[in-house]
Image (cartoon, rainbow, N blue to C red):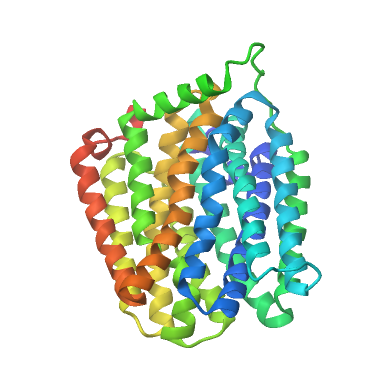
Length: 411
């Protein structure tokens, strides 16, 4: 199958790739519905922006602790089975939250809610490495850039419909029903990955010691300026520029809307990323990829500043959509760089390290946003984050010249 001849539609006729995308979409829908629902639930209980930031911190600590071991497991154990068990873990935590919302499980204040979020962090450590490692088993190397664009569209579609669906379900039937729908998506994702058509790589006969094997992955990333630079750029920009965690507070205190508006605003960045992903799937970037990545992250920071200054729902949604378009460029380029640069036997470990850079930055960014909102005020904290993102772009351009000059054809 040739990307040039068949285009994105030909990729979707690949049953292995299509099945992998179904798994990713269903898991993403489940996770996003939970993210919206638990944020709304906690803010209703506490009315404290810091409680929203603590969601991120509670998830990222166990994620960080387990991510490297998850990458090792993906490189040494059957990948589809690991994905199935991860989805079942997501199902378990969602049912826990449903039990709390319905009053059938004791909440102990908010302790049980945060405990479920912590378990979710462990589960999520496996979802990304499973997808990234199987991606290279269902596509040819020349299709990686176009496949990354299609994969980004699917992921961002989940980010569009998941939050919007979550907000609508809360408004329609309440918290418990929203959690149960998320649980159904998690179960369906487990079935999808269990039935995926993909060749598993030959498992190593002699397994290296765990920490030595993890060290091999770490050395690869930290000795590869392009991979390290792309990951660090995204990590710090999301760490400082993430405003999504503060959306319940913006809805309540600045824009004065209900949960439906929360779903719309959470979906807006992903809607922009979907539009950009559709474009990049047809026109995968090759030349000046490093410069394009830097411009995209700078645009993201400017959009975050515009969002903080907005007082109209439609304008806020527009800024968030534009930020999603910029982020969509970053996601596709970073994913393509990772796939083209990583040897197959290291994909699980390198993907887990990438997850630490990227995934942890989302949750740490949520905590940073909550803490900054407490110290600086809601709007000034988001403006500060956008300005810091612009600073990160300038520093990366200076410190990672190979990334700045990158042409994907060189990989």
